[in-house]
Image (cartoon, rainbow, N blue to C red; front, side):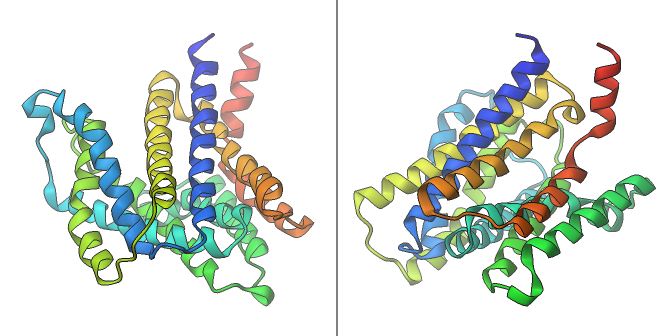
Length: 283
């Protein structure tokens, strides 16, 4: 199998894992306080990554730019909390469609924070995507949990943009490890205030969710190392297909035609049409 198609396969499997993680949150159905869930998930993530972190040379394990890493860890805390609320109270397809606004939000944020000047085509595509978000949200039928879905999208966008400021000497494993560890003090303090006893079934669901997200992160890194992002990023859209199918199969969440149109409007600007045309032309 060529590196290009292997990278696409890895991304599809990764998005399947991420979609199943959302299913685990949906099954919990708000039975665990939000930040108790986030704390346990981050703790389990740190424990899973710890052996990989320890296998690195001591220089690679060192935390660089601590303020930036602390900022990103707390962005992750906010986004994870918003995600739990959104997935619990919205259909899976609707919540994830709004999450997909994150790449669209990155354009105005990169202009504001990084002083980048986007081409006109990207500006138009972003506007189309935002209209798609409005179609999915439908202000006349607005659900309060959509605010939390938008909060998740915003934190994802900020998380991705600030990743550009990370030192190249800091490995991905080190970044994932310290992000998890640095998020623990605040999540632990908030979780302990409203701590609820949980059984082994709930703990397994949270462990499954944490492991699946880590699997997605690892597969995504492997995929983007094998092929150019612009050529394979379209495979990320498989996540919306998976959550829509899971919503129909397991939660009786059948999206109406207007939601489907909105999802298409969100996804279409994210597809690298130019790269696809170039690839076809070179065959």
